[in-house]
Length: 501
Image (cartoon, rainbow, N blue to C red):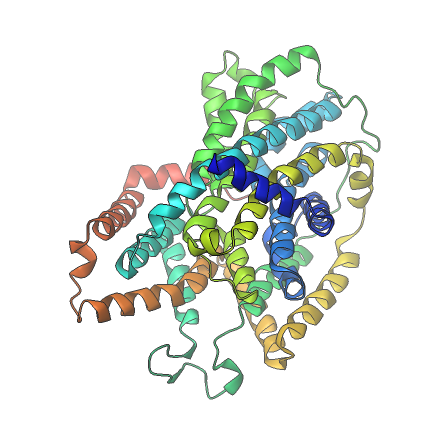
């Protein structure tokens, strides 16, 4: 009964005129940036963080969440129409979606992607509503030692699931942890690593770092490699799948939803991993595996359902434990901190309207997406013809004004420029920035819980292994780190995490 009363509270909160408007803005923006290849949800949310400072907490988080799962919808449009995934998680969709478009079934492919995404989003939102309260109750029993160990698991998992070299991912986490140390010591009040600049006494600005590493660096990369985008067709017709296509999509959608819901909870990019895993499963289960790569319906329905389910369930560790499962969730943590909200299990008990309002808004947002996306395909097709060199000056100006408006601090603009260059260099060195951001967000929390646990145990480090939950979490972290360095697993990672051209 509590679940239904909580959901009623959530829908009452998300159903206000203001929150419906911000949900609509979020899903439309998400679809737009998903359609425009090379921008991405992470960079967009990073650039919009300054705006959220002026909004109500629940409205801002609903809008940012809408951008995230809206981008999963939009990414499939470019993947199908121009063989260029707008989002990394839509890369698999391009394989068969584009081939369907070449056969004149672009409308059907887009409808299959939208319907599969809606089903997955609905089911995974329901799962968030079911599993979030009991996980929150468990998390309320955690002490400092358990939180420290949990964050170690999160960081190790982000390394294991990062693209490319494990060693480079480990280095990125370490760099993020070091950057998180800049500021004033939480116990002694002594400035650390501030280079004598008073403006950095409170630490590096999260918004400036995120906008630089993801927003500015992404713009520089896109300017370097911009190519002409050729849209397959100016007008998309036949938006309804045939009866046979509808029959073929049902089982892949259900399997993709299950895979995405499970993998989305894992730190490090569950939506991307889910889409690859779903495609592999569908190809192995298919009676006609030779059809994959030539326009197989299952090759579109499964991965699209998986990446949307993964995007939704990645909110579970954020809302229950305050632990981000991917870079976007790390930005959501930043948005909550900007609003004065301490991420973690206390959010559900202290601010139930916010907690359940976000969950309810996911279902509302998914409904908005499936209603709006198909009629607006013509508009998205036209936007694909806009040259990137026209877009980037507007984006840069928007970023700079937004970052400066948060603290009116010119050093934040210097930080954006510096981290933009750092992000670009990291991209050229094939170092994924996502673990860096997770390390930066979790670093201060990791240090705080480590030092608090040591103080409570009177300096006894065995407290982390004598407490059962903490010891179990640390054992999981060690096991994951050992497994990921095994030669067979290393080879498998290279096959799964391919570099998108």
